[in-house]
Image 1 (cartoon, rainbow, N blue to C red):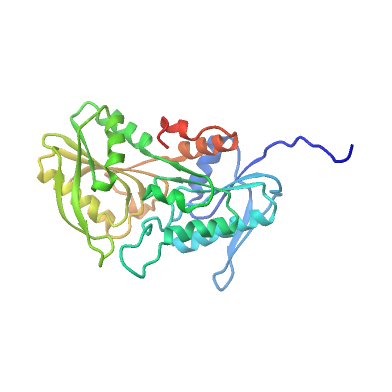
Image 2 (cartoon, rainbow, N blue to C red; image 1 turned 135 degrees about the horizontal axis):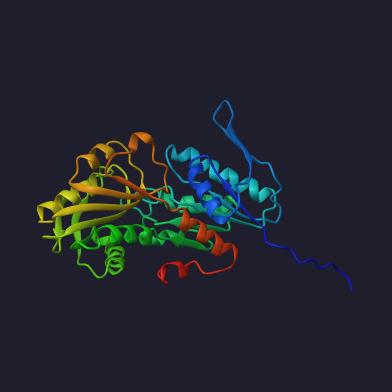
Length: 326
């Protein structure tokens, strides 16, 4: 008989870029392992260099990087890390991006525009990624841009359970910031015990980024605390206008809940001065000290990411984490 047989053990290894090391450390603490040591720095001309200090041959690699500002630099580092793993013979490479950069550029609004979200997926596939894990994509169809398995996690259970525990004894209404996210709002409503739904009718300016006009509430929020939900807060213009519209429609208060806190200027000032009594976010992106304010509550996404990594590594079910909705 020719040939040789070996029974190999699976080897989980977790790697972190430099964009949000605190989150990666939380994830490995929950997994009961550690981050693989690495060297990462820039050359004098700004080029990025990455090298792992341990052998990664045959491992099941999970590479965590949040695409925060300066976003292009951290995406490039993420790609280089994946390439280094591929060339060092990692058996499977899973890219963990809590926030998917360029997700808002998921279709052409006008002629001669790029679809940058698709380009992102192609870049990671070319670099050597076998699988993606991400949280609350701006549009669900981005999952189809990547030619391989995509685990689309939802922060809804973390955010909604916090709201239910803190405000569950009061009259609530879930408000979607636009008609396109009404399905997410329906899940929020179910999680909060079937509270009423409403949405904000708005028109987005195609000639000016991050700007919307003509807000009005469709649905009944009078006499209730409006729970405004969205996937991200960038300049906070949209969500603050929505909060003001809810108050004008008779809401007794407004709570804002969002997964990704980009918080570009002047978001912090807008949120501070908004009618919202609390702004609830997760730590998919790092929050600088300058962006902290009294109304802000940050919940950790690490338990969600660590469980997803464990399910993927152990060939379990990620969908079971969300009652079959993922």
